[in-house]
Image (tube, rainbow over all chains, first blue to last red):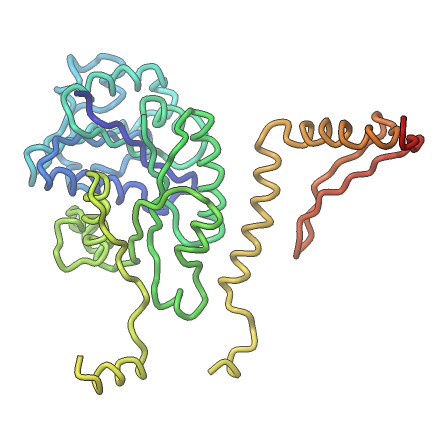
Length: 266
Length: 83
C-alpha cells in the first residue's frame, strides 16, 4: 500500500512549518514508521539545519528532478538518530522554478511506494513554491499561530488548498501562550476554530525548548521534558488514528489558585 | 481586578478585526461571488418590481466595526399584485 503524502503549509512565513515537519517526521519514525521529509523550500532550505543534517548533503531535490543524481534513493539523507527517517533536502543555490509540479509528482510517486509517510515542507507564499509543494500531496496540514496576520494567511491558504482539491486540511495551532490567553491578550483555540472552521489536529504551546532544540539540531519531540515535544508526540498519535485528548493549556494557576491547591492538599 | 483593566482585552480586537478582514478576503477571492449574488438578487426582486439591471451596484463595504453588503437597485416600476 502506498504511503500517505502530507504537505505542511501556512502561507505566512515563520509560524513553524519546518519545525512541525521535523517533529512530526521524527515522531512518526519513533513510532516505527518509515518516513521521508521533503524540503520544498528551494533557495531557502532549513529543514536540514533543524534536523542537524546540514553536513551530510550531497544531492538535493533539484538534482533529483534534473536527474543529475541517478536515483531518488541516492539523494536521501538518513537521519543520524533514527534508521527509518530520511530527508530529501532542497537546493540552496537555485530558485523555486528549478522544479515543476509535474516533477514533484513523479518524485513523490516513487517515494510513496517505499515509505509510510512522505511529509512535504512547503515554503511560505502562494506562488510556484506552493504549487510544487502541494502538487503531489493528498493531505494537508495548515500551521498557524494565534496572531491576526498568521490566521488571515491560513484562511487564504485553506481556500487555495481547496482549489487544489485538498478539501479537508487540518490545523495545528502553534506557539500558544496559555498565560496570555488567560489574560485575554491572545486568541484561544475556540476563537481560531470558529474563524477557520477546519478540523483541529493539535495545539502546540510556545516553548523555549524549541529554540534550544533548533540550536542543537535535535527535534523537540525527542526531548521528554519539552511541552512542545509532548504536543507533537500527541499529534503523531492522532495522525496514526488514535484519539488523544488535547493538552490542557489553561495556563499556570495564579497565586491565589496555587494557594487554594496548597490548602486542599493536592 | 477588573477595575484596573478598563480596555477590552486585545484578543477581542484581534477576533473582530480578523472577522472583517476575512469577509473581504473571502469575497474577493471566491471568483464571481458578487456576480452570483447580483444574479440571484435580480431574480428575486424582479418578481415584484421592474428594475434597471444595468444600473445595479452591489458592493461590500467595511468600516472599522462592521462589514455591509450595499445594493443600489433603481426601480423602474412596481408590478401589480396579480401581474
